[in-house]
Image (cartoon, rainbow, N blue to C red):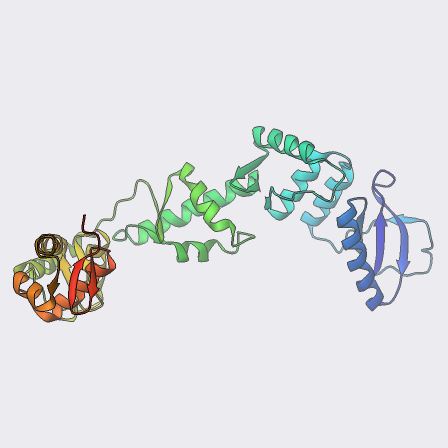
Length: 333
């Protein structure tokens, strides 16, 4: 292997000053030249396949591309052909890296910040690159990642119609091989609104999707709701009516569609019963300022098994606050 320097403006497809050295020194020299070259922006450093020293002295030699991948050859050729053209410099950089931060872009180059921003604005206007927040994207990559994201979400909806959205963790997992920086995910998710993909807290969905329970589960869902409503303030525990995986899937659907409220891992209530019970507790506390567990249990007519997670849920929702053995409204207004 040999290290070589191409001086822009003087040579395009030939190499100046081929240097032969041991493998260790080759590696060190290449790293040093790469660092200096990237800082000065004045030359390109290229690492060639091993070239026999015989016949290669100081002077020039043809550029060997057999060891490079096609996209690397295309990148280097484009850079060599467009030396001194800032717009093509930016385009080749963003084509290579897919995404670049605008801040600090080409600060080590001889171009002024005003010139760089002017060229960026022109490229964005011409849709050669895409801007989103502090990032710029390669337009072709952005179109491709948008198509992948849309297909990913729509496929999830098709396979899981009962879920209101695709978990963000799963969405990111499926796209991680196509996204060069993890910091880009949030930016991508927000920008996807232009193609109808909406982000909701910890999930993502297409704007036309509405969670629907498959027809074969509808009767079972009605039966589970009937069980919960038979004694709404004393519902059965989850393990009493979650008989199998289908019941768990149905309950997950009822929770996602907000027909049922989860108080803890063992207790759920119908939303109507939960909201009515909350209103009763709030009205009592407004009139009496505070109440013990026993007093609240008496006015609701519920069991301690249901009451304790219910009160903790009110605390977590910011409705009430515990003060010793009593509950009171977090905000008296």
